[in-house]
Image 1 (cartoon, rainbow, N blue to C red):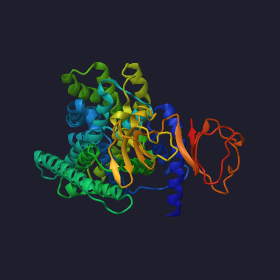
Image 2: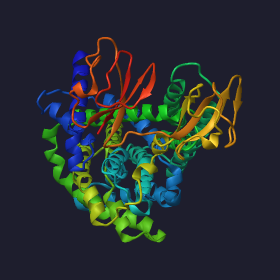
Image 3: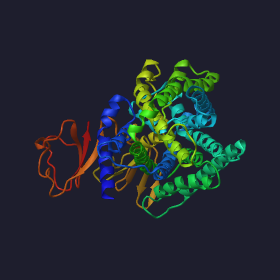
Image 4: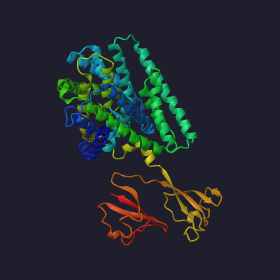
Length: 529
């Protein structure tokens, strides 16, 4: 147990520290987890022998539930509304066409039987939301023609179709007598119905119930993601489709304390992605990849330069999409963890295969993330697809939360400069608005002629400051033992790019200068550039 925890902590720290390198290379940082898993694995430095496909499938499938749910929860449907139809077609018809084209290639070029070829095509037919999101946000790819929203919606919603096709061909390879239309219809109807109904119910509950427990809403949403997958799955429906639809409905509805939910799922899905990629890297045996490298390379090249572009063009050309957008969307089809997890599920079901399906798909994903991921940002610039007036963050629901209105209070004392003034005469920036005045035992909705009286408490609304990539604000509390106590600001050896911008104490709030002395019980607001 201790060894597992020690290894987990070391790996996560290494990957966080390595983020700067992956940022410069333009590849998803999760690739580092994949490589570290291989490094620590049976052929690596620590030679950890891990080959439990069953445990890996359980852990990774559970992690995918939250990734799928949050993929929907974080998608701003208002921004994506104009491209919802083509994005949906890409995640359904596009996936089917991609699977069929890859299946035909594997059959005719590699000589694999039709059912196994189509299973391979199905497993790798979806794109990876985590990798696409990571590159779009980290590289600030503000794309023209709502392309960022299209990629986010497609990559977040196309795993359910890939999963359905995978189940279909696993069943056919197993010799099960099934009705293909009935299987697909059952998966879609049950999964879709449960996702939407559960989402509606939970939104209703969260807006009307107080759980009287700290972070009750967050815990309730955690349970919702599990139920969204488990309930339809138990009835033969598509749990991943249900989780995604439940997420997108809830993420685009009003929810109290939504920021807390976003922050929790940011962390949860980040850890889930790390677990999946590291565990899959640990599971693979690198010395065995040589046997499937050539077929993996051939499939990846065909998928990248023929199958994906043909599928994207077939969907987007009827909508009049410009050729630059078609080219970029085609290149953005990164394969990821879901494909590897689906490959494990196929192996556990005993589907016959000429190649080791796990190794084959693992190699394809590794090549796709490394090659396509590193060239995605340069290609977007080369195709002149960058929109300087757009902001890719707006395509995610959490951007709305970051820029939301916040409230502050001002107490009007006898000597306050606003005391006994009409509100219109109080010197106040136009970006701030007094929305409420608490006066003795009453509440007033003010207007310009409302006179501010001593004893009034003003509630002021304004735009909340959000941490920028180049600046962060944080607080430091000074106690009796703090090393800064009793020193003036000019005596402090602050790191470069660090500035104390405000001091709060019992006397009030001051904007300090170099002669300001820090006292016990002060709260310092520090800006780090």
